[in-house]
Length: 56
Image 1 (tube, rainbow, N blue to C red):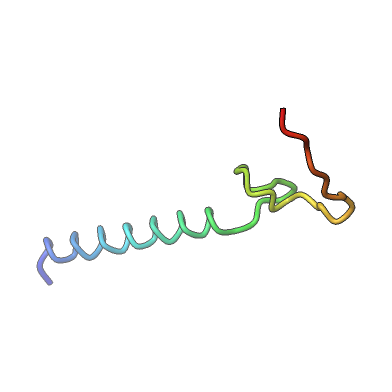
Image 2 (image 1 turned 180 degrees about the vertical axis):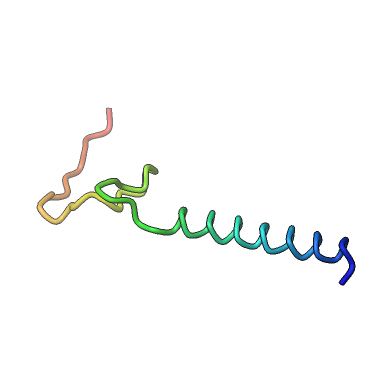
């Protein structure tokens, strides 16, 4: 095999590994943490009664 072809395959394999690792780390659930955005995915609202506020 040509040395340049080996280098290209090596870089491609590294890039595929890097992208896969980034996706895995972003999609796996964090232990004891919520997602950090304002989506309320880690909050239980089952006990909260909805109320209306008067406009001022």
